[in-house]
Image (cartoon, rainbow over all chains, first blue to last red; front, side):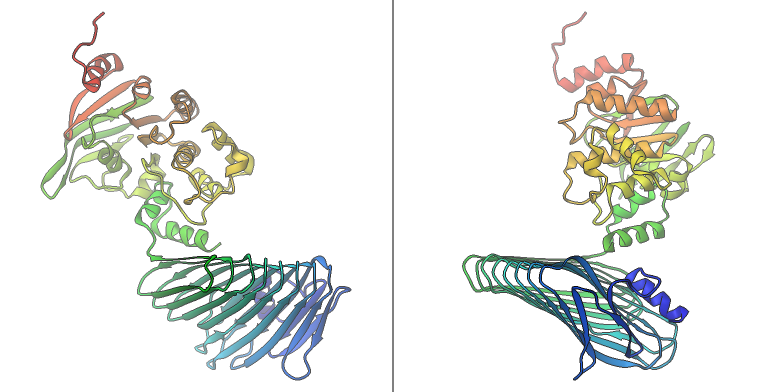
Length: 305
Length: 235
């Protein structure tokens, strides 16, 4: 790895070197290295780009890192990663993509991540996206996440795209069986003339399933965001979707929360709020000695942490 | 010392504050008066949140009339809001650290929270958002002012919303704050027990100073007016 790639890796995983334990590292369109562990097997797909990750039933307190780095300009790829998580697991998966584009051609990574979480398993999925480089070529990422939660499975998904991604369409589709729970926390910041689109579609099919989808975003300068969230309650279940956006400069944000109940015991709530930073928040921090721009930064950082 | 000279504030030709001159050098100075008399406006003018229409403000002899909120804060003015502000994602620890101007250890931050009667362990990581009650926010607001430790601390109705916590404790907090910082504390209040600790009391009425003096000079008349009772027993 060169210095640019190491920086990308650090931005998306917090790691300086190749991860320990089970991992798969993809750099500039090809598999740079992978490692399986006793309970986690990583297999390269034969028919298309990507990997299959098999986590043995009963695996607890283990993690898998699967970062993707792109540092050559003009590269476009579509990768399929499938995660098969056995019963009674408690694991963490850390994914993420860093693009450095110093050239004039667009660089694009589209990842389709599918999670099959078997019953009674607990999964934490962390995904960070980051872009850097001063070339005029765009940095484009279009992540698709497909989630299948079986009986009493629990998944927590944290995604963050804070800087440098010019164009993104983020799609997440989930189906939940009885007793399954999905919690999603999305953090998004766009600036310049970036465009970000987020689409969530959650089907609460099983009795007592529950979903909690929360998106917090900041749109600066001339950037545009579109948030669409649809939660379908098809059984006795609970669903909550929330979009909270701070808008600045000439940005534009559109939030379209949709809930649909197909069962009398489906309890669904949606909330959406878009607004600029409250003047009183700025004033409060200024009375503590911060300048207006420091106060603004503090408020945004807190909002997106 | 804070000195106000002929402070006037008008909104669309309506006079909110009319030619207020005042100096604050004592430990505790209280401003009281009926609702709408201009108390909060005066406090905000001192903190720089509202610019006075005319008049001058001096802090230790320096003219701060045209300084911003931030500049005044850095010169040593603190302001506790009557209705504390909520922030999504910013924790109690963040705010206390920002107030103190340095990265605090958990133990240091806890000390400020304990002083306002909050069990620090339960609060330090909490977000200062809608999950905290008005009373809790109010105490955190006071803890922030304490952490700043400036030469002038202005409190806009600190007692409002903290009724479950005794006034006696609130008064102890102010006394301790003074012991530590030796800075003047200006309190806007309607509460007799808070006015009772003031070295100087200012009564505002319709934007003007109605009375100003020591507790002994002001309190008897004030209590008579406030209670609306004409049959106060003398002696």
